[in-house]
Length: 359
Image (tube, rainbow, N blue to C red):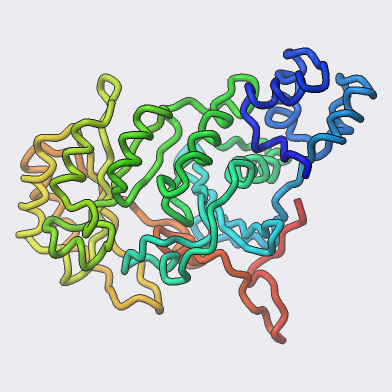
């Protein structure tokens, strides 16, 4: 079976080439073709000799994710539906933020964590994505933007799946995405969000350099275990201890995401408990008013309740922002990704907004 070139780190690519007697610098050339020029075939790598390209084509392949559909929200958010080689589908979301663009990347087909407020989790788990499938979301999304002269500045691993449940592939993807002669993402522009897999958090701190976000969403073990089954394995005490141990650069903080669910975790008592939990940590807090979905039983809190919750945290000196959800009208907001092709009129499969082109 041929090797997908986007599954390989620079060292792995150099080893592949060395096996057929090629020089190490050829790996650097290929990296630039893959991620700076974003070519879709080995034949396009024109500074490799014909013989080198022929040998490489015998060893390796360069498949691309097939972009099935693009949906655009009223606020400019764009959701890409990609079909994988096995027929599975995943979604990535391009989020406009002031003067920069952020891409929300998926790491699994589905998710096995079962958080009650997340649509992705309701579809169950199918499989992990390969490193190439993670990286190619960024490559294909940037190719989509190239004709517009726009550049993705930030990456967030907050799409479909739990990134730390696919740790090895994600760590390799982060390494590839950071290459200076490739896509050139710095560590401070890559954020990974986890529901709280404690052992994997420690490994992530050892193996990759990214900003960490923790999906907290509750202030007691009973409450969190009802919302997030992962808490039954790694309760709050263990999770917060892992956060204290996580290696942070000077002036860096862990982001704690707190989805506000009306009548569930948005009370004044919840806010005060959250202060006690996070005050000892180098933390910043993203409050996320729940994005309602017909498949889920929860409701969005009224604006006054969100403001009251935030003010309690601010009064205690915590850094807090209320995150404005984007893309809710195309089900691209936090917790809404499903990775399914929606039936169009007449029962055909397609996008409800505008079809994309195959990558």
